[in-house]
Image (cartoon, rainbow, N blue to C red; front, side, top):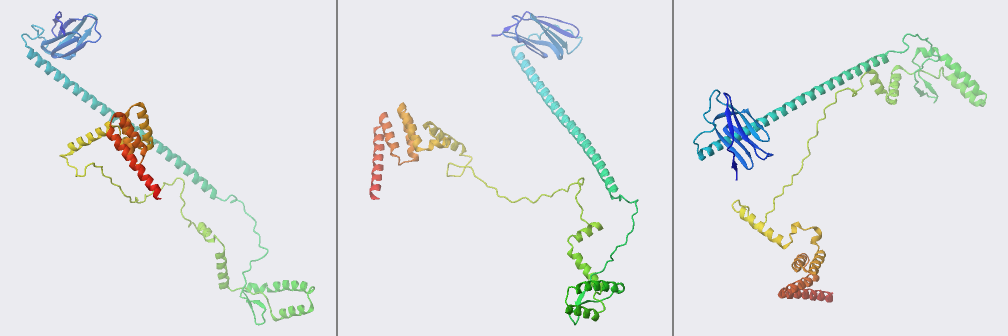
Length: 428
């Protein structure tokens, strides 16, 4: 039960109300509350509630706590007004309760508004911080990009200067000596056979006629060397050939020469590529500092979406009106299965093995837990109903519990299974 403090003192000035409240026992936690015309101080088991004559400004008021007393220095809402008394006179309990509730509601609303304003202020500061960070990152990226562009331009300028220097001939100021070829170029010849089956050439160049005597003299020298090793008959044949023809070599005409050059150029591999490069008709090559082309992605591949439906335990369509009853029935069924100890959805893989269930039931039987043993044997029989050991052991558990009729049923089932197996073995 709370003890009301009555031995407090107060005084007033033109602007303040000062209240002295004694504190006993040096409490660790002291609850203080001031709003409008309501003042409260409590430290178990003592409490003091004051319903002041006029309102005070709680934001401009203060309280000083010591080991022996609490001093309230309250700022008057209406200055230069003398209070005839500290509290409202002749106030009933219902009025006190109304004032208390009104003050508490006001305080709660005020705290909520302050929390809301604080939250809004924090969100605003967070947004501003994000904006500032984005601006800083953008400026940094712009500086980095400008620096990269500057380096790129400098590198390109150096590269262009190097290329312009490389295109200048190294020995452009040195004049070389002009030399004449020792052997003049002779165009290819077009050979054919005459009526005597002797190889001849057709002459169409005047310059070749001038040099014809020189060529014939060279051939004569070669023929003279050949005469020493050949017989007389071959010498006569060569002499007759020389006398029958004035010349053995005749130059091709201009059309034939041009056609021969064209065929020869076709036989040279890569000649067209070299000519295109020399003429500046080579394809453009991607450079290091070129802007990369944006790759257009291919259309998305078509796919299939598999749709599955939720399972339903009832054969009838789902109805919103019967949903609560269905859920209640399903929960009762699940609870009933859970009480038996076996829910198929919650079982592990080894718990679905009949041999494992038989061993588990044997352990329960040896420990004297016959109900658990019967549950294990029954679940094993549901999985494998042809395993005689499960029936025999379950009949023993029923016998231990005094369920003699169930024991007889299990023994009869074992007998039928054994007879069927024996008949099957004798038949085959």
